[in-house]
Length: 168
Image: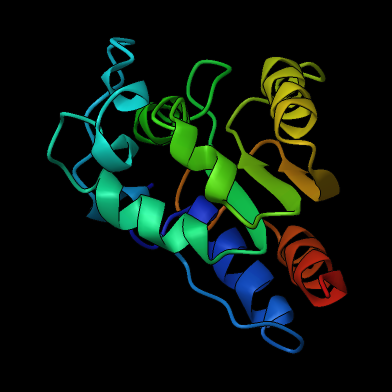
């Protein structure tokens, strides 16, 4: 996500609301070097279920071990989440995921297009993730028509803040 971009603005608004009742940490995927999963399943056989790839995903695993509620925020690129975020999600294909304490998941998406179906494919994947991990949906903020930095409306920022505030 771009520094100071619409996704970051929405995530920050959400965090500001959530801080009223929660400890909050924003993890920007752009700050981490995470390789994509190659599907080798070596993590199923290795000690501690560690991936053979020695990258920053280990830091993210450590954070996920102690997280109750996870919020995924992403810009929408060609009807999908960012490649960096997708790499992290794919790397959750590990037995370590059984140690996560996450009970709720929320979704914040922002895209430049205004098509009604803009978020449909991501929402389907989100629902499958909820089902697979047996998580409760904590809510969604879906923003269309925000292309350039700062295009996200005050109404959308307020919606993100209110969703954050509702998280307990």
